[in-house]
Image (tube, rainbow, N blue to C red; front, side, top):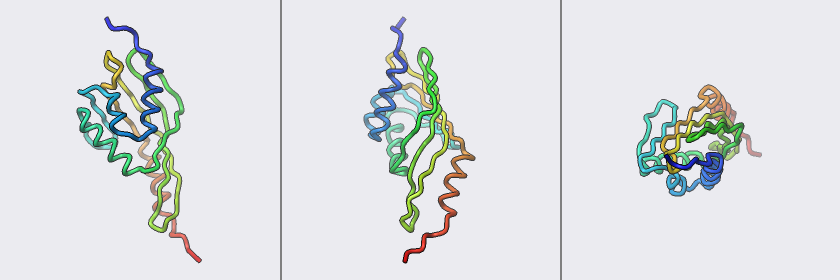
Length: 143
């Protein structure tokens, strides 16, 4: 039987690394057989290369993405993170708009403390409302 994992410490390391937006560093904390599933209607991705590519694309799509932790629940080899995605979106007229919507991560760790599986659930109605509010704003008039 393996030694007990310090899941909160592992979460702290993961969150700190995720905040760097370095897809290579993040995936180094995943097992080789890792699975990531962004529960937004897409299929899960398997293995470090595919997960790295997915995270890199996400950071490119959301260049000012951040997160706000609401609560963290830990167990022997998992954590559940209740969090909000925060971002600033720039509309074609150059106006910057902050957006935020809630998400939930369920993360399973292997016996070595590496992420074996990460499922991210998005509050889709909240996300759609936040994005619609930005895209439906009238263009700013410049004097």
